[in-house]
Image (cartoon, rainbow, N blue to C red; front, side):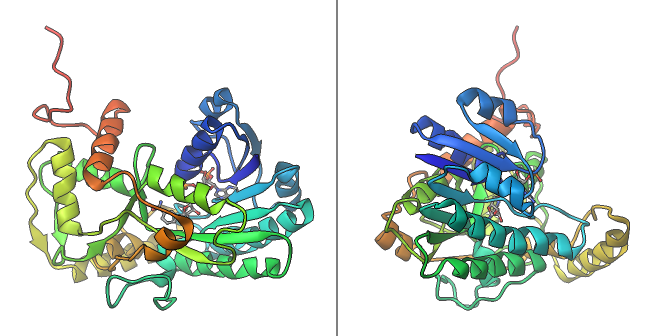
Length: 341
Ligand SMILES: NC(=O)c1ccc[n+]([C@@H]2O[C@H](COP(=O)([O-])OP(=O)(O)OC[C@H]3O[C@@H](n4cnc5c(N)ncnc54)[C@H](OP(=O)(O)O)[C@@H]3O)[C@@H](O)[C@H]2O)c1
């Protein structure tokens, strides 16, 4: 099958492209700009098209002959950019992808949304029927992106929405690397109680879900929360990371409100200058937004079953961070190879 993966050289996109190629599919990746992984993906057989999902011609060009489109491109990690960038990419870009999928005769569009469309879960665990309550502009625009797919209702193009929980694994440039780096220092400052729930999804488990959702007649017009089988308190997650790294960690607690206030101030001051603030409200939300879901619908309707559990997933992630030098492990960690005599 010929598949277009938008955002195909990002963290999740590259893992998906890699799996599709290994399963013998022909893959085109559309991405905004050249990145470090592009040559590796090309060597494995991917074709990479550079262009924005907001550029209709680029989308049409990359979609030629595609049977399936996996739409992952998103303004997500952009910090210090105007809100309109999020709207243009996540809403208008998704509409363009949907309209071009119809024009190109694509049979299935899988849209990567986010658990964040549900915001803070008041009564955990939540599910796809939990209130839609985006807590920030990113989450809001991801939800509006979901609504843009309605243009495909009643057309031959089937679509399925995936709402991943917090994605982690080898290749993750973002959130988890920060947890690992702090744990490596032996002290993890915990703002608030540490009892907030956090729901991870290991990258390979998520890729499984994308492949299941790509099947014809499966999950048409439906949204699915895709997470690992278990969720954890953030304090427990930090302890599991320490276990995976084989290092001790101390977790002192501090009140969260001063951090939140500082996040708002930093964002206000830095944004007009396009500077990345050291802390900002979305980052502070990690300590206070409850994320915990049932994945029963995906199990029932997609046949999804997370294969990699947290300890194995964190171990593989730790190994990747060590091997790529992204995290400096203390000499006491069993993951640090002994020095040659
Ligand atoms: N990571 C998570 O925990 C998480 C959780 C739930 C949902 N998601 C969703 O999962 C998807 C993948 O996220 P990720 O973690 O893999 O993030 P990522 O590494 O930032 O991947 C996003 C990719 O989209 C590309 N992109 C951004 N704007 C684009 C545009 N205008 N046109 C074409 N490509 C564009 C980025 O390119 P550049 O790098 O060149 O900018 C990047 O390669 C996103 O849809 C995100 O909303 C992520």
